[in-house]
Length: 471
Image (cartoon, rainbow, N blue to C red; front, side):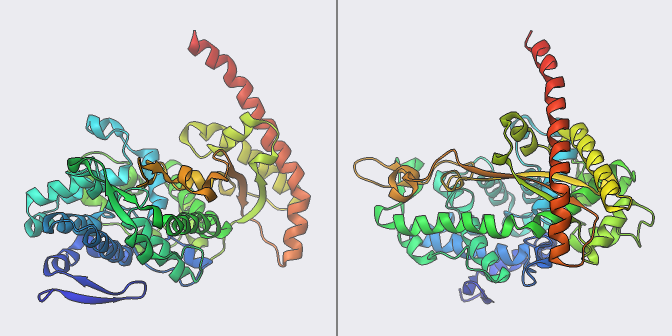
């Protein structure tokens, strides 16, 4: 590390970087990550949550290096996973994960190569940037850039290399749990990082080694998985966090579809062209907010919502219902996916009806375009342990076993349990908590009746169409 540097980090203390890594961090694409916050506008409820994708990238590199060292990977493999950790978030748009929903909505997937049509758009963008950015290629070489791009997509060499960067135990999760907890000022995501690392081992044939946990690390792994679950339920699904995310998404959608802002559409309407990629990387949190707020785009719906976000004049949660309290399973399923583009017409009908209810009962006009119906889910902690990925394997004797079947604690948790909810956010105001409770109580049954009736009607209309399709 003679030619590298040591960076002071609030989570990992000192992070050691090689000279090559320091130069990589100095490239424009990496520096852009300083201007993209890790948790979007979570700082409006957790004031300390102003950390960025750049901070997180440093942490992931450090954790990936620790794992590689503990597993005794060779120097080339260690170099690849550390570089991949630094580059893994290049494709994030403004406000991080919030942009993913808009990218998926407007992407021209027909422009993607056959093998990438089902990949997340921000991951496609990441792979392209790694393989085509001249500053990165000049520094690392085209061959290494291609290896890193493959590692982040289909995998390179041993599966363990990809699992360190992207998998149920990856360095990404390990850092963001600790980092987000630290900057939000909570303890929900804290776990014993070093004990977890001491338990890491490899299983499988020599050329297909995979990351696993030794039997003596099960308690540390339980703590890690529970930390992820609790941080999800208490921070990532916090009411204000959900409202600000949905306000950003609605501002962008209204700007594209109602204000007809072609400059905004051009940011998110993915197409596999140099023009798109060159334009995309010019945008970050600040530029998007200031470029499309009420001052920059007067008279626009997009501008009005961005202006409200800047003033912290947030929409209010006027309705909240656990989906399991709705009796019809078909309605529950429909509401859970209400944010998908295929449900736009239904969502609009419900939001218009709720706006009418609010207008009639609150004595002031409520614009239906600023009424947001949002369905979301928190999977069971057993399901969360996989996170849409393969199960974490325990290196048990005589054969490895999935963690959720090995852990006595997780065996006792129902696989099918999920805590889904449906919310309504609207441009209303109240002075006190007592006022909030009074208003919400008065609206609850009225809003629920509208949601159930309109959704039931839509489902009944869909039935003949499905039968015709089956024929």
